[in-house]
Length: 281
Image 1 (spheres, rainbow, N blue to C red):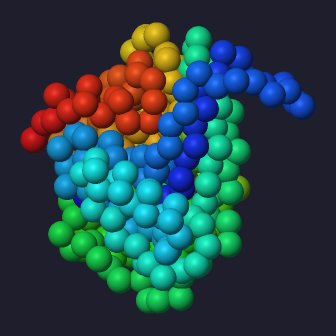
Image 2 (cartoon, rainbow, N blue to C red; image 1 turned 180 degrees about the vertical axis):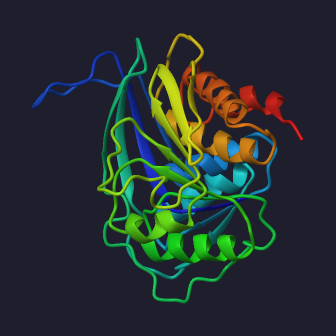
């Protein structure tokens, strides 16, 4: 499985209450880990037993080494397209409320991170599915084009509209959208996307296909302890399910179950051992 996109360093503070503007609060716990949509999806895929390779841009800063070590410790093979780039990787600061897992996040995302080397189609031919998040546009396009040429399914993590999507959506088989995602006309099916899935937090996940079929799949009811990255985990599980489940509803059901397990656990990585038993081939 090949995943292409953003890698950040996440600093996560767990607090009794989310601070108001100008307020300082004492945290209950601090975690530091690699993050970002494609990155968290890669950790999920590896935990589910897939061979996960992440194509991203990290660079030579010590913080990049921290992210790389975290990912390798969790079974993700990292390919850094700009290993000598100076400056820190994108950093995300999050506060998570202890009683219900609600969170606030401030992130630079890809920011000014660029790479000037030709993007290799590393591993596209060997992948059974690819996932792109669009945060590095030229990377997403190169991987999606390579996958389309090789009949490898392309899954898009569509958290928000990005200019690259005008071109990228023509290459996407499954667009998994957040509830806040909106796209200019024409619609995603009219742009060539075969399956469109929309998540809604704890609400049912809705889906439709280009042939006119549609439906929704309920989300398991669990006590949420930590919702940080839950959407990314869901996308990673969905991409794995594309290779393991035959129907859209079964793929969504699998992703729902994995994401529900994630929110039951505190911290950016503690949930990975809980989903390892869901390995299926």
